[in-house]
Length: 163
Image 1 (cartoon, rainbow, N blue to C red):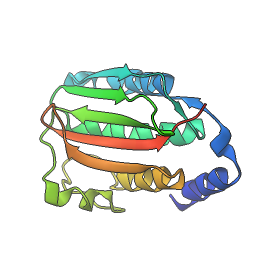
Image 2 (image 1 turned 90 degrees about the horizontal axis):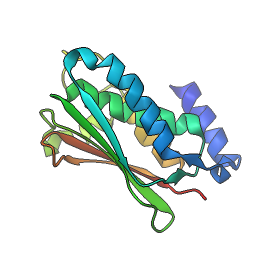
Image 3 (image 1 turned 60 degrees about the vertical axis):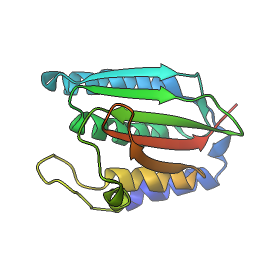
């Protein structure tokens, strides 16, 4: 984890913030892969939204979206929706919603800590959301957790827009 974050810090400070990575192709590719992985559980992923550009490295966007989308698939009853927002004010948001059990408001900050797992019955290390939060922060972005309109959890990544 520390090695990956050190690489991301170096990339962010070395000027790679000038790179512009299309968000939809990354989200679409992750949805195809995760769709195959979770097909046995009947989880369906849908990606929609604007053709935003992320001002940063493709592997960092893959890491952030991949962790959030994988978590949504783990907890979803049957549906995960990824919505890419239109850039505004130099930023854009990606909402990842699921129809799972959700997360009580008082526990949402807890899951952003390293190694924190609220339910040991589901595979994972408890590092994913902490990595997402740290990577987003390196790019001047943020992660927010809320109740999803689908009934489960909504994870919102707010990131710098490129182009």
